[in-house]
Image: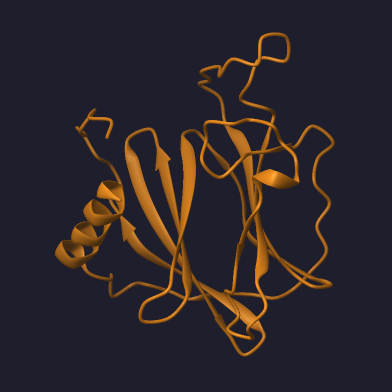
Length: 167
Protein backbone atom coordinates (compact mmCIF):
# COMPACT_ATOMS: atom_id res chain seq x y z
CA UNK A 1 0.00 0.00 0.00
CA UNK A 2 2.84 2.37 0.81
CA UNK A 3 4.48 1.66 -2.54
CA UNK A 4 1.24 2.47 -4.35
CA UNK A 5 0.94 5.70 -2.37
CA UNK A 6 4.51 6.64 -3.31
CA UNK A 7 3.81 5.88 -6.98
CA UNK A 8 0.67 8.02 -6.85
CA UNK A 9 2.68 10.88 -5.38
CA UNK A 10 5.28 10.43 -8.13
CA UNK A 11 2.53 10.71 -10.76
CA UNK A 12 1.21 13.92 -9.20
CA UNK A 13 4.68 15.48 -9.04
CA UNK A 14 5.87 14.53 -12.52
CA UNK A 15 2.58 14.52 -14.43
CA UNK A 16 2.27 13.13 -17.92
CA UNK A 17 4.80 14.02 -20.57
CA UNK A 18 3.72 16.03 -23.58
CA UNK A 19 5.44 13.35 -25.65
CA UNK A 20 3.15 10.71 -24.17
CA UNK A 21 2.22 8.61 -27.19
CA UNK A 22 -0.54 6.02 -27.01
CA UNK A 23 0.20 2.57 -28.41
CA UNK A 24 -2.80 0.46 -29.49
CA UNK A 25 -2.65 -3.23 -28.52
CA UNK A 26 -5.05 -5.54 -30.32
CA UNK A 27 -5.86 -9.15 -29.44
CA UNK A 28 -3.39 -11.59 -31.00
CA UNK A 29 -1.90 -15.01 -30.46
CA UNK A 30 1.31 -15.34 -28.50
CA UNK A 31 3.84 -18.13 -28.43
CA UNK A 32 5.70 -18.11 -25.16
CA UNK A 33 9.24 -19.50 -25.10
CA UNK A 34 9.43 -23.04 -23.76
CA UNK A 35 11.45 -21.83 -20.74
CA UNK A 36 8.93 -19.10 -19.81
CA UNK A 37 8.27 -19.09 -16.08
CA UNK A 38 4.90 -17.95 -14.72
CA UNK A 39 5.62 -15.56 -11.85
CA UNK A 40 3.16 -15.37 -9.03
CA UNK A 41 1.48 -12.11 -8.13
CA UNK A 42 2.75 -11.63 -4.60
CA UNK A 43 6.34 -12.73 -5.24
CA UNK A 44 6.62 -14.93 -2.16
CA UNK A 45 5.12 -18.23 -3.31
CA UNK A 46 6.81 -19.34 -6.52
CA UNK A 47 4.59 -22.27 -7.45
CA UNK A 48 3.95 -21.32 -11.07
CA UNK A 49 0.47 -22.87 -11.11
CA UNK A 50 -3.01 -21.48 -11.67
CA UNK A 51 -3.21 -20.25 -8.08
CA UNK A 52 -0.69 -17.61 -9.13
CA UNK A 53 -2.95 -15.82 -11.59
CA UNK A 54 -4.74 -12.55 -10.93
CA UNK A 55 -8.26 -11.87 -12.14
CA UNK A 56 -9.70 -8.39 -12.68
CA UNK A 57 -12.36 -6.82 -14.89
CA UNK A 58 -10.12 -4.65 -17.08
CA UNK A 59 -12.58 -4.40 -19.97
CA UNK A 60 -15.61 -3.22 -17.98
CA UNK A 61 -17.88 -6.01 -19.25
CA UNK A 62 -18.55 -7.46 -15.79
CA UNK A 63 -16.39 -10.53 -16.51
CA UNK A 64 -12.95 -10.77 -14.94
CA UNK A 65 -9.95 -11.21 -17.23
CA UNK A 66 -6.87 -13.26 -16.42
CA UNK A 67 -3.57 -11.39 -15.99
CA UNK A 68 -0.36 -13.39 -16.40
CA UNK A 69 3.27 -12.30 -16.07
CA UNK A 70 6.03 -14.53 -17.42
CA UNK A 71 9.80 -14.21 -17.39
CA UNK A 72 12.36 -16.06 -19.53
CA UNK A 73 14.57 -17.62 -18.24
CA UNK A 74 13.38 -18.40 -14.72
CA UNK A 75 14.84 -16.17 -11.98
CA UNK A 76 14.95 -19.13 -9.60
CA UNK A 77 17.60 -21.81 -9.26
CA UNK A 78 16.12 -25.08 -10.56
CA UNK A 79 17.79 -27.19 -7.85
CA UNK A 80 17.25 -25.05 -4.74
CA UNK A 81 14.28 -22.89 -5.77
CA UNK A 82 16.11 -19.86 -4.38
CA UNK A 83 15.89 -16.51 -6.17
CA UNK A 84 18.98 -15.77 -8.22
CA UNK A 85 20.41 -12.41 -9.15
CA UNK A 86 21.13 -11.66 -12.77
CA UNK A 87 22.87 -8.98 -14.75
CA UNK A 88 21.67 -9.97 -18.18
CA UNK A 89 18.43 -9.11 -19.85
CA UNK A 90 15.37 -11.24 -19.22
CA UNK A 91 12.38 -11.44 -21.53
CA UNK A 92 9.18 -10.37 -19.74
CA UNK A 93 5.61 -10.96 -20.93
CA UNK A 94 2.49 -9.33 -19.46
CA UNK A 95 -0.60 -10.99 -20.90
CA UNK A 96 -4.32 -10.40 -20.43
CA UNK A 97 -6.74 -13.16 -21.43
CA UNK A 98 -10.37 -12.28 -22.08
CA UNK A 99 -12.15 -15.47 -23.03
CA UNK A 100 -10.69 -16.51 -26.40
CA UNK A 101 -8.85 -13.20 -26.86
CA UNK A 102 -5.27 -12.69 -25.72
CA UNK A 103 -3.63 -9.28 -25.40
CA UNK A 104 0.14 -9.07 -25.03
CA UNK A 105 0.54 -5.84 -23.12
CA UNK A 106 4.30 -6.13 -22.63
CA UNK A 107 6.80 -8.35 -24.41
CA UNK A 108 10.33 -7.03 -24.09
CA UNK A 109 13.76 -7.53 -22.58
CA UNK A 110 14.34 -5.86 -19.22
CA UNK A 111 17.53 -5.70 -17.17
CA UNK A 112 15.64 -5.06 -13.92
CA UNK A 113 12.25 -6.12 -12.64
CA UNK A 114 8.60 -5.53 -13.52
CA UNK A 115 5.60 -5.35 -11.25
CA UNK A 116 1.98 -4.45 -11.90
CA UNK A 117 -1.06 -3.05 -10.15
CA UNK A 118 -4.72 -2.93 -11.10
CA UNK A 119 -6.53 0.28 -10.14
CA UNK A 120 -10.29 0.75 -10.12
CA UNK A 121 -10.74 4.50 -9.64
CA UNK A 122 -11.84 6.47 -11.54
CA UNK A 123 -11.68 3.71 -14.16
CA UNK A 124 -10.09 0.27 -14.20
CA UNK A 125 -6.58 0.33 -15.53
CA UNK A 126 -3.40 -1.66 -15.20
CA UNK A 127 -0.10 -0.05 -14.21
CA UNK A 128 3.23 -1.69 -15.04
CA UNK A 129 6.40 -0.51 -13.32
CA UNK A 130 9.74 -1.20 -15.04
CA UNK A 131 12.69 -0.82 -12.68
CA UNK A 132 15.60 -1.29 -15.04
CA UNK A 133 18.88 -0.60 -13.36
CA UNK A 134 19.04 3.19 -13.21
CA UNK A 135 15.73 3.90 -14.93
CA UNK A 136 12.11 3.85 -13.77
CA UNK A 137 9.25 3.64 -16.28
CA UNK A 138 5.55 3.45 -15.42
CA UNK A 139 3.19 2.30 -18.17
CA UNK A 140 -0.58 2.61 -18.04
CA UNK A 141 -2.93 0.24 -19.89
CA UNK A 142 -6.60 1.10 -20.43
CA UNK A 143 -9.17 -0.91 -22.36
CA UNK A 144 -11.09 1.12 -24.93
CA UNK A 145 -13.39 -0.14 -27.74
CA UNK A 146 -11.91 -3.63 -28.09
CA UNK A 147 -8.22 -2.70 -27.71
CA UNK A 148 -5.82 -1.81 -24.93
CA UNK A 149 -4.14 1.56 -25.04
CA UNK A 150 -0.63 1.82 -23.57
CA UNK A 151 0.83 5.13 -22.52
CA UNK A 152 3.91 6.06 -20.50
CA UNK A 153 3.05 7.92 -17.30
CA UNK A 154 6.62 8.29 -15.98
CA UNK A 155 10.01 7.80 -17.63
CA UNK A 156 12.90 9.00 -15.48
CA UNK A 157 15.44 8.27 -18.22
CA UNK A 158 18.50 8.01 -15.96
CA UNK A 159 18.18 8.00 -12.18
CA UNK A 160 21.44 8.41 -10.34
CA UNK A 161 20.32 7.45 -6.84
CA UNK A 162 17.30 5.68 -5.42
CA UNK A 163 15.95 4.67 -2.04
CA UNK A 164 16.92 1.20 -0.83
CA UNK A 165 14.16 1.00 1.80
CA UNK A 166 12.01 -2.15 1.70
CA UNK A 167 8.52 -1.66 3.18
